[in-house]
Amino acid sequence: MKRRKIVFIASNMLLLFSLSLFNSNNTILELGLAQNFENSYHHNLIGSQGAWAITNGTKDITVAVIDSGIDFFHSELQNVAWINENEISNNSIDDDGNGYVDDIRGWDFVNDDNNPGPETGDLINRHGTFITGLIAAPLNGKGPVGIAQNVSIMDVRVLSSDNYLGVSYLGFGDAIRYAVDNGADVLSISIHNMSPDDIYHDDILYAVENNVVVVAITGNTDDGGLEFRTYPGGYDEVIAVGASTANNLKASYSNYGLPWTEIVAPVGNRLDSTTLDNTYGWGWGTSYACPQVAAVVALMKSLNNSLSVSEIRNILRKSATDIGDPGKDIYFGYGLLNATKAVMAVLDPSVLEVETDKTNTSFIYYTTAVIILAGFVVIRKKRKKTKM
Image (cartoon, rainbow, N blue to C red):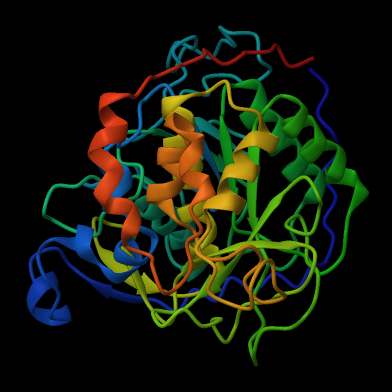
C-alpha cells in the first residue's frame, strides 16, 4: 500500500466549539431541562419523533465521523462503534488486506495508527465525540439523544490540537477513501477551508461515485456569517449545511450563499451532547448542524440503501421546511431539515407533493402510522475494497 505524503496547508477552519461541561448526575437540575431529551428543541423543529416512529436506524448503516476522534468509552457511546469484523484485534497483521493494520474501529490519520480515539486537553479533541452524540446517542433517559440511535459510527481521525488550523489535506483525502472503502454510507465532515483544494476534490468524487453521501458545513465566522463559499461544503457533490436558530432565523455565525447552501439544521446558541470522560456539554456552530443532516440521511438509508446520492439529495430538498423566502434562498438553501418528511418520503414519495413551510410544520405527524403499515425495507450490503 502506498499512502500519499502528508502536506499541511494553512486553513481558516473555525469550529466555534463554545463548550460548557456538566455531568449526568446533575444534568436536569443544572440545565432546567425535561428528562426526556428527545423533546429538546432541535428534535421538535426537525420532527425527529415522527422519523423515529418509522425507524431509529440499523447497524448495517455506517456514518463515518471524519473529525478529532471519538470517545467510545463514554457510557452513551459504548454500543455505537462500527467494528471491522474482517480484522483480528492486536495481532499486528492486516487481516483484511485494506492497508491498515488492526483497524478495528477506524484509523487515526493524525498519528497514522489504529487508535483514532481523541486526545485529552484542548476543546478541539472533544469535537468528534460531541458530533457522535448528536448522531447516535441512545434514547435512554440519561442524556442528550441522537437522531439515528441505532446506526454504526466509524471513527476516522484527521484533527488534533496541533493541526486544526493547518489541516493535512492529503491525509484528509486518504481518510475519505478509507471510510468509503471500508463500508461507510454517509460521511459527516464538520471541517471547512476558505478555498477549494483539488487534492481532495477527487476523493469527494470517489465517495459520491461509490454512492456515499457526503455532508459538510457552510462554515462559521466569528463576527457574523459571511456570504462566502467554503470547502469541502462548497463542492457541488457535497450537501452543505448551515445553522439556524430556535426561531427559524439564520444563526449569526453561519456562512451562507447561493448556490452552495443546500439546507439548514437548528443549532442556535446551544446544543447539548456527549463530551470526553463520560461528561456532557453544550456547544454551537455549523459543526453541529452537519451531523443532524448526516443522521437523517442514515435513517433514510436504513429504509432503502439502494437510493442514489442524487435521490437522497432530492428528497432532502423537497422535504425541507421552507423558512425563508419562498423556494431556495441565500440564507437557508432549500430550508430547514425535516426528518419526518424525509424518512416518510423514502417509503411514499407522494408526501413530497405536500408543501411544508413555517406555517404548517406539524401536518406530517398525523400520517406517519399509515406509512408504517405500507412500509418496506431494502438493505444493500456495502462494498469493501482492498486499498492498493
